[in-house]
Length: 403
Image (cartoon, rainbow, N blue to C red; front, side, top):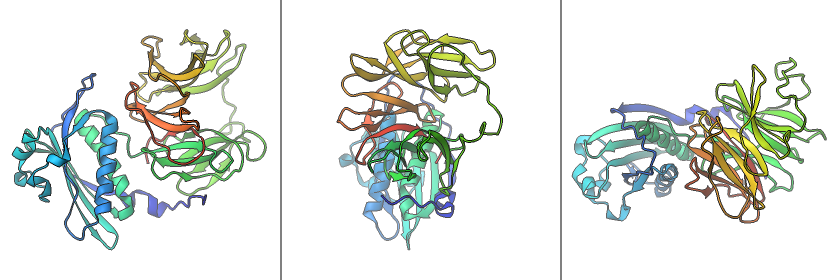
C-alpha cells in the first residue's frame, strides 16, 4: 500500500475555516439514563449546482456520529414535510409547526454551495419548541473535506446540548498486519480513510499520541531492537528516541521496585498517579502508584488475569481487560477500587481499550470474527460497532485528542 504523503498546507486548518453564527443558552443534558432527544435531520440542500453524493456524505457522517452518542432518536425522514425542502436557514422562515407535528425537539438544517471544488457549507441546529437557533457554523474548504466538517459540527452539537465538546473530529491510530508486517495506520474516529504511516517491515507495538496530537510514539523492531520512535503526523518526519537516556536527556525516575513484572502503565489526567499491571502478588492485577511518594496499592482483586488498563481523560474510570472463561472481556472501575462494571460479554477477545478524549467512548480490539478488528463503544458498553475496514488483524488502538 502506498505510504501516506502528508502536507501541512493541505491538511491543517485551512481546510476547516468556520465562523460561529450564534449560540443560544445551552440545553445541558446530564441524565444518567438513556433518555433520547427526538432529532430531525433535514437533507443538506444545494444553493448552486447539486452534488448529491457530497450532501449524502455529510448527512451520513454527521448522523453516524450523533447516533454513536446514544443521545438521539432520529425522526423518520420518510415523514418529512415541505419545510425539509426549504433552504432558508433563518428561524423566522422555518415552519417549526411541521417539525413539531413529527415529534422533533431539535432540528438540523444546512445548505452548501460548490464552485470549482470549493465548498461553502452552512449548518444550523434549532430548538423546535422555542424556535431558537442553538448553534450555527459556516465552513469553507475543499469538497473532499466534507467529512471533517461533519465531524466538527457533531462535536459542536454535543457541546451545546451536553455542555461538553464531542470527540468525533479526532483520529485513531492502530496496528495492522495487512501487508504481512505489523505497521502503524491512521483513520478517522469512525474508521474511514485508513492509511499506513510507517514502512518498517517489522514488528510495531504500543502506539500513542503526543499530548497535542501532532506526533505518534511507538515501539518498533525496525533495526532489530525494541526501539522507541516519534513520528510527526503532518510532515512524516520520523526520529528514533530510545537511544537517549530520557526524552529530555535526563535519567527518569524509577516508579516501581518490587518482585515481579510491572507493565502497561497509564497516567491519570493530573499526572500524579500511574495505573499498571503487576504479577507481584501472583496473578496479573491492576495496581496504582503515587508518583511522589512511591506508595502502591492494588486496584483489582477479581479474575486470574487483568491487563492493559487505560485511565479516562476525566479521571473518573479505569478500563481494562480481564481473562475469564478463556475469553478477554472489558471492565471498568473507579480509581478508588469501587463500582467495578463488566462492559462486554460473550465470545471474542476484547483487548487493549483506549478512551476517547471526552471520556464518552472506548476503542478496543475484538477477534470475534476471526481476525482482530478495531471496535468502538460507549463508556457503559452499549453501542458496540466495528470501525476498521481493512483486511488483516487490527489491534492496539490509540485515540488522538484532536485532529
